[in-house]
Image (cartoon, rainbow, N blue to C red; front, side, top):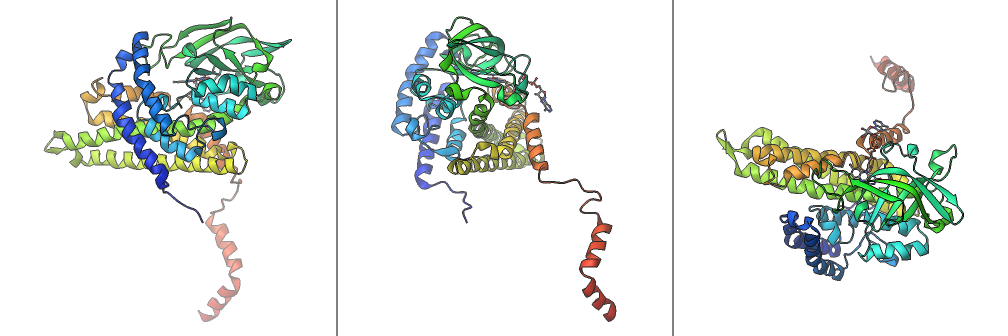
Length: 442
Ligand SMILES: Cc1cc2nc3c(=O)[nH]c(=O)nc-3n(C[C@H](O)[C@H](O)[C@H](O)COP(=O)(O)OP(=O)(O)OC[C@H]3O[C@@H](n4cnc5c(N)ncnc54)[C@H](O)[C@@H]3O)c2cc1C
C-alpha cells in the first residue's frame, strides 16, 4: 500500500536550494525587464545568466526533463512538476534551468520520437543551450481541431516540399529550427495523415511575416524572444530524413504530439501554481496591511472568503497535478502510453488555468487601483494568465475529453438506477424472507 505525500529528503534539499536561488538570483532580474529588450540588453542578460546556468549544472538540475542517457536527470514527472512550481514563479526561471518551453518539449519530442541522427543534430545543441526551437502547428484556419490543418508536405525525390500558412508559432523568429506539423497523407483516418518535419529557420521559403502582438505582450516587436510568429511556408524544401522519426515517423504526427504535450501540460500547470502563489502572497500581504471601514482587510469576511477559496483551489490544483504526474510516471515505468492518463491531464489543464486566473484576479481586486497599475506585476500576470485557457488546447476541448472518458463508466438507464419505487420493489423481493418474519411478529 503506497499512498504518500512526502518528498524524499534528498530531493527536498534540492528544492530548497532552488527556492533560494530563484528568489535571490533570478526574480531580481524581472525588475529590469525593459533593459533586456534591446539586442545589447539581451547580451548583458546572457552574461548575467551564464554563471547562473553553470551553477544550475553544478547542482545537477540542468535540462532535468530528459532521461540520463540523453543528457537529462531522469527525474520523472512528479519531481519535474515540483521543480516547475518553483521555476514558474518567474518567466526567467525555466530558461536558466535549461527547460524553457517550447525547447524542452521539442527536445523531449526528438528524444522519444526522433532518430539517432536527429538527436545528435538537433536535440543535443538544444540541450547545450546553443539552439532555440519552435513548434509550428496552429494555422489561422485550424487549431483546436488539428484534423483541419492544411499545411502540406509533398515528397519530391529525396526532399519534402512544404506549403502552408501557420501562426502562433512561438519563438519562431528567434529559433534555429522549427518542428512543423504537416499533412503527408489523405487517409480516411485523419489521425494518420500528419507528420512532423524539422525545418531549419533559414531555409529558403520560410517567410516569417510578423510576431503577432498579443494581450500578454501588446508592444512585442518581431524578433524579440517570446513572440508568436505568423509564417508562410512557400515551397520550402528539406531533406527527406528531416521527418521526425524518419520513414517510420510518417503519419505519426499526432501520436508524437501527445507524447510531447502530456508532460508539457504537467509543467504548465505546476508553473501556473508558482505564479498563483506569488499572487496569493500579495493578496495575503495586502489583507494584513490595508485598513478600510474600521479594520484591516483581513478581518472582512469577504476577504477571508477570497483567501480560503484561493488556498483551497491552489491546493486542489496542486494535488490534482501531482497525482496526474504520478500516474504518468507509473505508466512510463510500465512501458505504457501517457494517453491512459488523459482524464487527469485534461482536468489539470482547464482547472489549473482557472485557478491561475481567479487567484490573480482576487489579488488585483484587493489592491484596488494599485492592483490595476504597472507598479505591481499583477496586471502583467493577469494578461499572461488569460492565454492559459487557450494554448495547448482550449478549456472546452479538455472538458470534452474528460467528459467523454468519464461517461464511458456509465450506461443509459430508464428508470433511473436510483428510482425509489423500482428499488423498493427489488428490496421487497431480496429481503422477502425477513419481511415475512417481520409480518409474523407484527
Ligand atoms: C500564448 C499562446 C502561445 C501559443 N503557442 C503556440 C505554439 O508555439 N505553437 C502552436 O502551434 N500553437 C500555439 N498556440 C496556439 C494554440 O495552441 C491554439 O490557439 C489553440 O489550440 C486553439 O486553436 P485556435 O486558436 O485555432 O482556436 P479555434 O480552433 O478556432 O477554437 C476557438 C474556440 O472554439 C471553442 N471550441 C473549439 N473546439 C470546441 C469543442 N469541441 N467544444 C466546444 N468549444 C470548442 C473554444 O472555446 C476555442 O477557444 C499558442 C496560443 C497562445 C494563445
